[in-house]
Length: 293
Image (cartoon, rainbow, N blue to C red; front, side):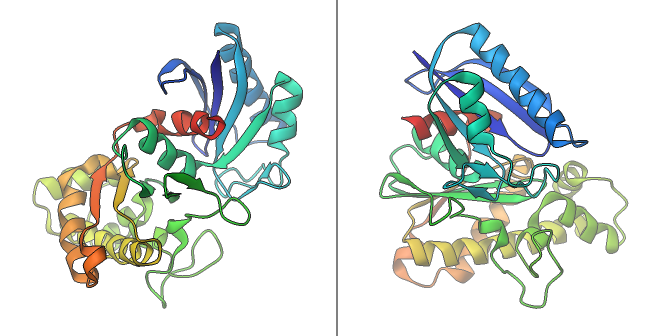
């Protein structure tokens, strides 16, 4: 019997049925409502109904934008303002009658890539999503690492600039303020670039635009610093990076790998590999199912 997986984010909510080999059998998706908590829940409930109408499930795994509170079974996503301390586990359990397990979306991305994607075989893995925001999750010694509250791996809110800009999290100088797609775009525009978004910025960098290339250099330097710091603490062997900005390919990964050489002084950190994610938009669903496994 399949696992029902949910992937809840600020842009979209997805539900799917995942088999025991990690294959996505069915997938349903809708935009995330932002007008009220109940509107967002009604979309979630509708997607659950669609998935269960396609086949039975034995349990539910939920990947949610965070912060999450595992003990309470609640979520307070920074990018879903209408959900604060929302009792997602209780709501899903009541609706489905199934056992439910919750995890942060960054952790689930890492688990999905560890199970079925670029992270197969890695024992100490950091999974990262570089997109509208920057998320992350850790697989340590082959197992998901939740941390005390379920929020371990929030690499996007590691400080990369001690005198940096204020972040949406309330802190200052987080790597997300430098290397997320919107912040890269905003910085490039402040330097005179006239494009509209990170996708255009990547295209401009690929075409040799100096400001766009500088934006990627600035972002990848910040990413390299926090990746090297995390690797030093956790003794990582692999970092897998997905998300919209990562679709820039070598425009991101080339300068990132070069920047890493400046921060990886210790021998064991120099062995760190950095790879693009393989699962794309399915990583959260596959990882949510992995929570149940």
